[in-house]
Image 1 (cartoon, rainbow, N blue to C red):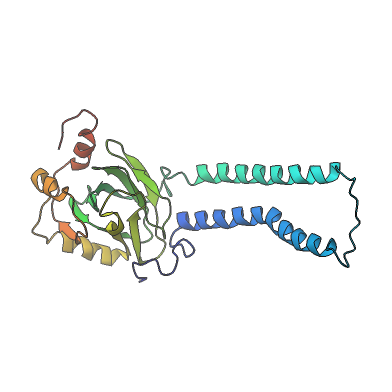
Image 2 (cartoon, one colour; image 1 turned 90 degrees about the vertical axis):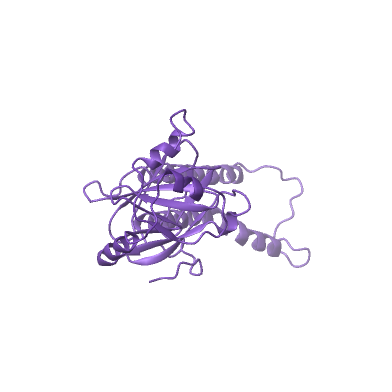
Length: 267
C-alpha cells in the first residue's frame, strides 16, 4: 500500500477515476493556456535581439502607430483560448458533478461524514458502526459520502481520489468517489477552522474486499458505542485525536446533527 502521506504529490498520481479526470483536465487547461504563453516568451527574446541598439536588423519606424493584423491577434487569440477553456470546464464540471453516481448499476457503500473540531467522524449506517479519523472502504467499489459539519465550515478532501467539497452545519453535501486500487491515502480539511486545523487529517484506506471485511469485524469488537451522550463528549474540541472505533451507533444520528441547525430536534 502507499503511505498515507503527500510525498508523491497525489494530485499528479491519482488513485481513482475522479482524480484522474481532474488531473487530465488540469493538464489540458495548462496546455491550452501555453498556446499564448509560449509565443510571448519566444517573441520577447526575439524582439530584444532583433531590435537591439547595436547590430539589430529591425526597422526603425517611429511614426508607426497601428496594425489591424496585430490588433486582431492580440484580441482574437485570448478570446479563442477563453472560449475553449469555458466550454471545456463547463462540460467537465457537469460530468464530474460530485453528486453524480459513478456507476448507478454498482453496489455503493454509503458513509456519513461529520466534521468536528478538529477531527472527522465516519458513520456506516448500513453496518451500524463508526470510526474517527479513519475512513475504510473496499477498493473498486463506489463510495457515496453524505457530509455535514457540527462546527464551523470545513472542506473535505482526499487528494488521491479527487473532488474537494464543503461541509457546512445544518446542510448536507454529497460526494461520490472510487479507488481503483488498494492504498492508504491522506484526507484532510482544506478550510481553516481554528487552532487544531493543521492536525485535522485522516487515513482513507482502500482495502481489498477480504481486508475490508476484517476491518469491519475489528471495529465491531470495540467496547465503545456511539450514543447521544458519547457523541456529545466526542464533539468537544480536541487536537490530534487518535483513531477510534465504535461498534454500535444510535440510529439517525447524522440526521439529528443536521437538525440541530435547522430547527429540528437536537441530538
